[in-house]
Image (cartoon, rainbow, N blue to C red; front, side):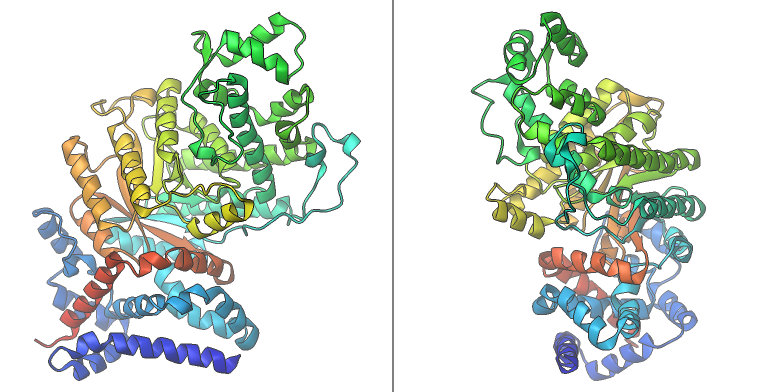
Length: 600
């Protein structure tokens, strides 16, 4: 095993050396390579002096010069002014290594092998001085404050992201409890192995520490949280199943041949929700599914859902009426127990659900008090409907002011996501709260497609990159256009939507900045750009130098817990790491290294 690891290391080194041939094409390249290695070992103080000498002045001066001209994402002085020469060289090496396909595909196995053979101490030593320090900022909230302050000097904000994440795995079932003692469904009698509520309480404290750190280091920044860290992921999956069944029930109650297609294999977000259910349809079909005392009771149920009293129920009203704690009571009245009956939460699950809600509210209460915005990360589709439901609950409570506190994350590689965004925009306007969103392409593409194939159902992921791109830009445009022209003093339903565009794609940056100009949007308010730390500096710092609100995702956490995050990011972005955009960035890093080191 040791020999195999050495061979792989030698392969990576040889590949990096081959890629240095680009430097050999330059006059005096051999001396240049030697100088790069020497410069990489210099102390930070000397390195910073050299950077200033070659970059033509301070960050502030570079920013002033950039702000006066058009956006140029190819200006290496602006893109890398915040980096020392050692950091640039380390980044160049990381890009070379991440470009080795076999290494990326098997990095999780290689990591496990290295821990077994070399031990965690040696393995983590090399990871800390390579991938970890390049992509992460530290192991706890206090360690990352200096990094955030450094970013702030260059006009870049920070998004604190505790990167340790729950494992996406099948539940491990214990022996079922007595089904007769369980409210609702037999399948909800199943319990699962779980680390415990104390771990979730500890994670809540970590997220609260991140909020305090944002307040102290970058008041205009964000904190990012994962709800899978605040509750049992299997509970979130059970909740999601329940919510999916409620969406399917909307179709069954409609009993309209034009809409009542087989939704059992249709991805959740791609289900048609454009129709309404009138009283006659409801009166005819509801009693076929549920036991009802009399027509007066049935009418009361209909009117309770029909919030605007227009005589029909649309999906916004239907979903607004869903209370997970009440579905159990509905399930008991099923005439023929089916999927909805089996998905209802039992008493123990409801207790855990309320504990999860309490943790979320504690975090958001602190965020509201400190004036810190919180982005709730999207996760895998088996638990995402529950996350959407919980975030909506939080947005209704905490986004009542001019500026939203809670930001939902939309993964636009999912089919039907643009329609969901449009529904949520309409919901925020109708209910009177400020809309806040982070928009990404998506991070679980490989695993989601594999799961769908195993289940024999349609993949929830867009079939082509072009479809994802169209979905992404349509979603961004809908949010940018929301309440355009509203005054700065508008509150709640009249506020313009706020958006963070999380992308490493230069074309997307140009699309968004162009649309901002066309819509006469204030680029310094409500429109944010985010890129991962260690990547796309030519986008982040160029945008910041032109007055846009640019941010770096600053992951942190114990190195042994963050490794799965780094591996997943690397594997899921393997195609991106070989894309023209990353090749362009790698070339720019090399160009800047040559500029700094070359005596001419």
